[in-house]
Image (cartoon, rainbow, N blue to C red; front, side):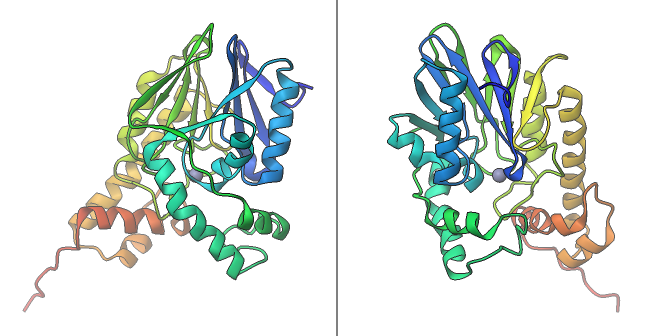
Amino acid sequence: MTANWTELGDRCWVRRYPEWDLNIGVVAGSAGVLVIDTHATVSYATSLLDDVRQLVPGSEVRWAVNTHAHFDHTFGNSVFADAGVTVISQENAAAQLLERGPLLQQRYVENPGVDPDFPTIPADVIAEIAVAPVVAASETFAVAKVIDLGDRRVELLHLGNGHTDGDIVVLVPDADVIFTGDLVESSGPPSYGDDCYPLDWPDTLDRIVGLLTATTRVVPGHGPVVDAEFVRDQGGEIGSVANNISGLHHNGATLDYALRHDEWPYPTAQLADAVRRGYEQLGGVRRTLPMA
Ligand SMILES: [Zn+2]
């Protein structure tokens, strides 16, 4: 069954799973199949692995890549590892998964039911997230790694911090396709969480733009496939968030003031962590002397 998969280039597919509008990628070569991200629970990942095997019958699924550490991209790792698939991520992502994954689960064990921060996740899925085995990648790298799929290569690149400190892009050069994880999102504004790097993110996106051609298909972590122009536009918005943070900090604006008073490209409710993280990176707010 290939109906739910979109072939973006030769043997390079994406499937948009309805949960969080999550994109899963598949690249097939003569030596085996690579899967991009492992979904959020054991049952989702088990279905995913079945879906991939139906997509490329007769081929062995050999590699699974995590674009970053967040649960919706990694909590299915155990299913792949148990099936003999090599799970690969950037080294910071592996460490962050082991450090922060259990904290998320603890929160869900202590507060079962719907998460007010993620009201779209059903309670039964929350319960599954809470008990998923947290398994980090068995192979990690710092900056770049090439995977030899036999008759083609796939490049994994850590181009800098952004959505997290362990984001990678997965480049499929012969298909002119790139999977960006949550460095790019088209289902809504980019997600600034409490582990984001708002000031570094624009440069990282610039490096991604440098890899794109006018015809490159760009697969975001969530949402429809986009192009270079979309990435440039989102990079401009992410750049203006960074500039606002720097400017406000320089002027001594408090966090509250910053969120109330400047013009942001995204709803301020979603930028609290961005501003806080940016301020942390820039150091304490300079105190100004009162006018006497
Ligand atoms: Zn994420």
